[in-house]
Image (cartoon, rainbow, N blue to C red):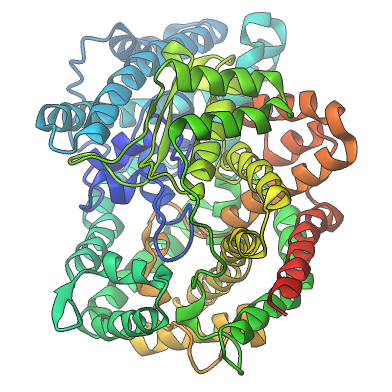
Length: 640
Ligand SMILES: [Zn+2]
């Protein structure tokens, strides 16, 4: 799903459901903003999976207890002309009279039909819009589909209630081989029902949410996308000024940071209101639904145990000083004595000015992937040969990069903005990793292809590690090696240190909010405390970023909280797998594929077990961290 950059429905839903403005490029697509890759992407997309009344998306929908955001807003006037959709209503009406086993079958069949239709329609509209954002016909069609889907949510909640109440559900699944592949889906309906409210309450909640958290989120999006940033005698926007953090000129990086911080003054009070209101809504909702805390809800949505989170964070804690060492070494190399100032976090180092064609990229990737697995090699070859990839930037096309699985064709489509830099090859590797993950789950029925956030970036990050590791080994001069390692470590530092600071910040907001309204100054204070803990003496403690709570969209979702730890999970899970591949060689590969296949029908711990991994054991997480620690040693050597 997610940055759900690989999820077929994400961008479309995110874009079309009135999520709060912004275009596809901002919401649905991987976007290298100033906080590294994979950021600012998933929330919107994932959030809107919940309105989709079908398939895996569905599981993230009513399953997690908040209901489709727009339930009832469009009534039940479906009119899609879809037999599946109509079937659902007939099913609903007849539910009471049917034998349980028949109802289960009809539920599954109805879901399959509806999801098949919706996914085709959404993918078509979404891809058309990505290729040309001014395609108003596709935009308008997407809107119409979203509206019709949201009309299904109340009926869907009823069906789920009905199924969940069957005390013979397990026996029905066990007795019928045809239902075996739906076991996880059906069992989740039962366990999710614990947090489901009555149909009326779900509808009320969803209606109120439109003018509640969802509206506050829109306000924040609107303010951050429209705020005027004064810079160099002119005016620019927030996203442009933040991207200057990557500028090769240190004076530009510093002045951009100062201009960015200055602009927040204009909007900080309103955004603080938004954050306070959203967090209070989440706290209240968790109480009503019976979640122990917002974090418990986030873990539940991630299909992940608390022990896993504790092992992950515990291992990260142990390695934190190593990342501070990297930051201090970078600071020293750039001429700073007291740790790295915030505005130098993304300062490029070394030099890599080689240019590549798409043919070079193809040869490069085939060479690397061929050494790993022939199925991956062949799929990548197909992707290049059969025009799965829209490579180059052009007017009207969205920025960034994404992969979109097309289940009906068992293919994927990849969009990039290829400019010939080595980073563009890494981006292709990443997106083709998602495509490879698509291939592994396409063999499930369509409504069993959705996987949870923490595992969503596994195959993509794994491909990146394969590609960059090979490049570092092959790098011929010191500057090239340094550029590659630095860029990798700067990304890693985001998923370790920054994600940790976001987790600490969000925890402290949830803790404080029931007792107090947190004004902008208080939020800045909490953010600085979190950053000091997470970045230690790696950063210059007099030059941090108190407004990170304002510029990151992740805190502003009423339906998904703690959208931070899945990034750390994803990055380190893939690295831990890579470490395992290095130890086990070829025999790891089939297990890896089997594990990817299992991601959509298992909780994350059971998925990892397939590759022989215990996620609740810190030792596993240490392996990924150690591989980064080794690179930090290499980096420190290079800049000595
Ligand atoms: Zn990705």
